[in-house]
Image (cartoon, rainbow, N blue to C red):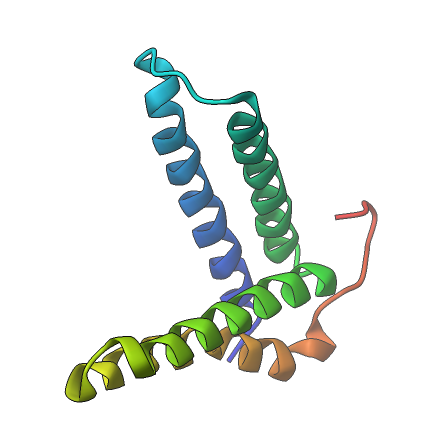
Length: 123
């Protein structure tokens, strides 16, 4: 396993962030009204995910921590909520999906010595 996994995580994060941003702009471009709070929240999420994605591409430890913690909590929530809401044979798929979202945390732990806190720039 190499540090290329973090660069791939960063590219995927930025790509999905752009997709989310473009799909969020759809209602605004069609003239549908949304509140300024929703627009601010969308722009803030876009900027934060872009920063984390570029931090992953630059192999920064802080970006790996944010990325891994977010996916661990999301994976725990999906795995735990699939126990009661989905019936037995199919809830195993929900739990497997939640557990698979926790795998980047293992990559972070294994590649921790190869990551950097900062370099020439902050991120």
